[in-house]
Length: 259
Image (cartoon, rainbow, N blue to C red; front, side, top):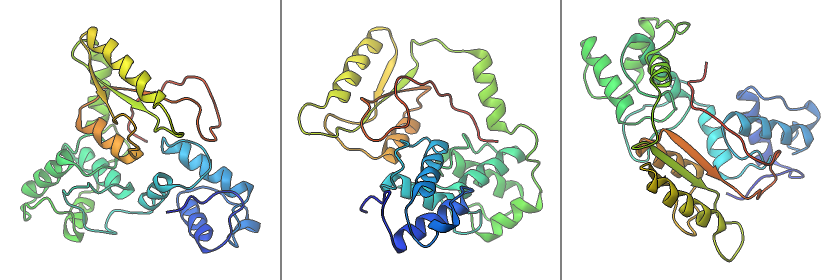
């Protein structure tokens, strides 16, 4: 898709605005005729910030994908293990409910992976349902009948807390290194820095995991999948201030289940 940005008009902008409103963002009424004005751009930036996307205020493929995924509610579609994996807020809701009931769905990361499928099958086995790992309306109704308590800490939260308390040492730890895609012709400087960092980490006994190759323009979703599949405990992101970022310098984030 072509990026949608400030100054744009039309049906595509109205679609973006509708999805932003559904995700809890605010857009001024005077722009809801399909005008990509200041409040729409600010809403896009807030949405991107909340989803861990580059906060450039532009609706490109990754932001659009996240807007679509934010619109799903559990029961809207049939979920099952596939490649590429299902992504969306409905998957996160499923993971939270299974974890709250004591069935291990893994990280509440909105990705329907093998661990989530295993949690679904275990739930189905315990309620004497057909054990197929498929989340259709029958499985959704079965889960909701048990009224999982969402107020207390789920299995995923308890696991995260235990991991933090136990601590870890760098030797043997998988460190994902995410280099921003190259934006101009010539040497891929972010990747060169990432490769040098990987070599330094390797010498310390750490297991570096480069999330893209030299010159590769891997999407945010692809890089997320690679980090999750590789079992990364830490992610280091390298960028050179490309795009229309709201901030510059360094930042530190930690994984945690949304509440």
